[in-house]
Image (cartoon, rainbow, N blue to C red; front, side):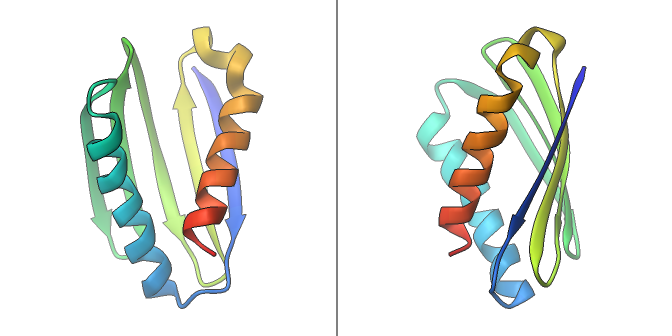
Length: 100
């Protein structure tokens, strides 16, 4: 497994940022349900754990929503590590849109 670490800054109230991140996960289920299965999330306060399968690959990680940023740490299969840079870029760009 390869590690993913992404930090996305924001200027929102922490609770608003949490709500937007949760809404994003719901939107991902709706938009990409044909490519993503077994999407699970569990939240305790400002920390969420997630996991899903995408095109036969298992992905898992944590989201920590702080007062000034969102930290995503996760693991992707080694087979996807060639795309790690593109994955991180996409997560950062999409996260920045949601948190702006």
